[in-house]
Picture 1 (cartoon, rainbow, N blue to C red):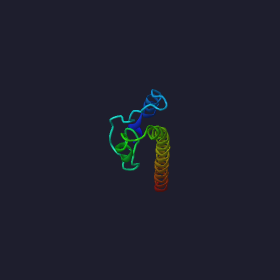
Picture 2 (tube, rainbow, N blue to C red):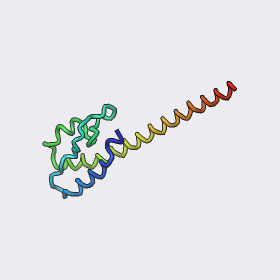
Picture 3 (cartoon, one colour):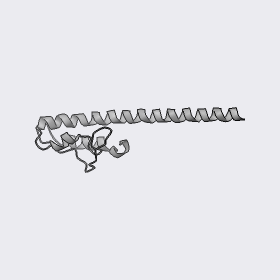
Picture 4 (cartoon, rainbow, N blue to C red):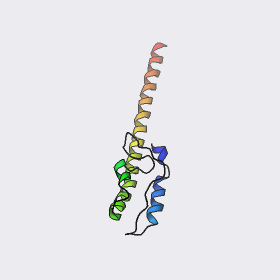
Length: 107
């Protein structure tokens, strides 16, 4: 999912900064509408299905609150992605070490 949200944070900041307090905020939708089963968030905007479905009738205050949550979600998912990549790299290293040890024993 990480690669699919490249540039998303900049998109949010640009849109958010275009609208003053109290004005209606635009939808964070980027027309990349797929729900990631692991996170439950849309891969394009990081909203849940419930948040997407109820965007229209949300109050401006609730929309601002949701906009404020999106970069936090992005950061959390980014950290989770990096941690998973480190775990994968550690697992590969362990497999390679074991294979090298077996190869040395067979010599």
